[in-house]
Length: 189
Image 1: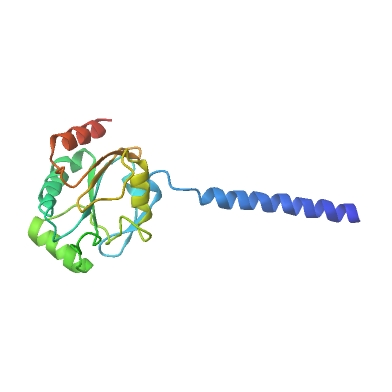
Image 2: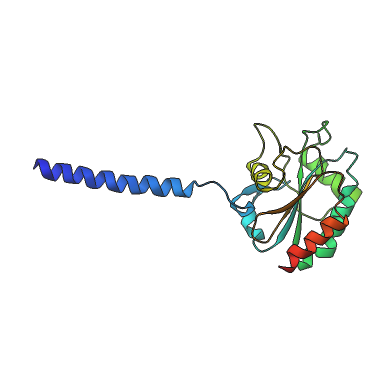
């Protein structure tokens, strides 16, 4: 009787270990941007996996920044390359000089009326610090430059594999030759 009890207990332990192993496998660290869900500017959950096979241009944006006119170039890239598989993604951020202090509806109105933005915009996020969105933690970890985001309008190009292909600082405009060249190379893959 005692042997049966020990055997039953061992079987339960082994099956419990398998359950624990499965649980930890489900909670593995994200490896690509496709592993994330984010909220749109309107508050709807968006699974980034819906963009698998696309090239992404992820940008932390702001409405009252010296680089805000880059919205025009971002929208131009969206218009020129979206049919070829590019998705421009704007992530408003208020961490730099409080340059994105507006509500979601104010951000949407500004982007639409001032720059005719049609590319996907997402909820306001932190890109640095203890409250940074996990997406930006992954982007910085995968880029050659792992440093914190320095200012608004830093750009990450994500290849079709969901991993960072390049990072560009604020001063590099979205239509700079080096950005266009890399976008076209990624789109051709």
